[in-house]
Image (cartoon, rainbow, N blue to C red):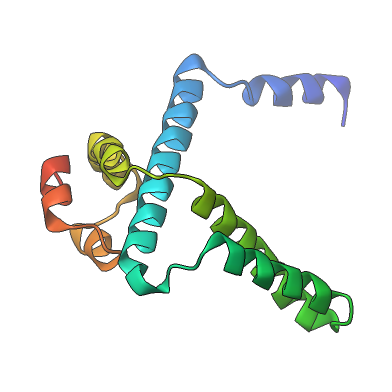
Length: 138
């Protein structure tokens, strides 16, 4: 590639302030949606909640199993380890579902429009109708 083409390509990829703002908004909205949906999953799983200690025991067992696992088994154990680490982190946090819900309500309509997410899709992942109504999603 000539120096002239490289310079032109770099200019073509410059990010405008508007695009930067849109990227920041997208990342922020995605984080809010993810945190709210994860909190809903924990709340809806009800009796399946495991203690931090039981999660740590399971994590230790997974670490031990990794030493002798074949390639495919290792893949699945690595994913299980990642899931357990996330669950331990979640168990360590005191999540205020009302605060997450409020943040979700503030951005859900914008996120839904930008990502073409329907009312039905939100309902299927467990978002209550009253929350969707408050967010202006019908």
